[in-house]
Image (cartoon, rainbow, N blue to C red):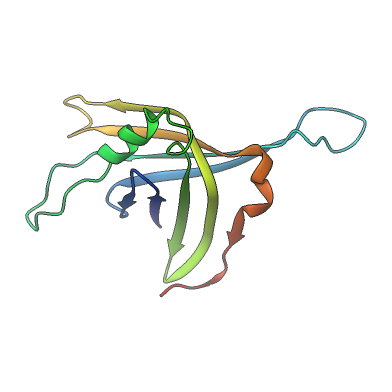
Length: 141
């Protein structure tokens, strides 16, 4: 299984499978017995490795996740986020949040984890949920 993540915005990052350990998508609606609530939150959690520059001089773009997380300018805080899960040449899921913002971001560096790890929690802007694209079940390119 391979995971990839891409953020397209002022602080763009294109993270290959070497940087992405897991992706979790979560949709939550209010708990009510009266019917489906309209206050929906759509969240994505991405975890992975922070790597040093490899022998091919490919830089680790996780630094741009940290920059995105600290962006407080309303016009720069939103990015297009794409998460892809692939197995055996098939795209199992390709989720696109066109107006995502960072809810939380953390990094950890220690001897046991190698170079470092990160955890990115992002959410689609609530009034633009209809822009989310969820596809999958097709052969990858």
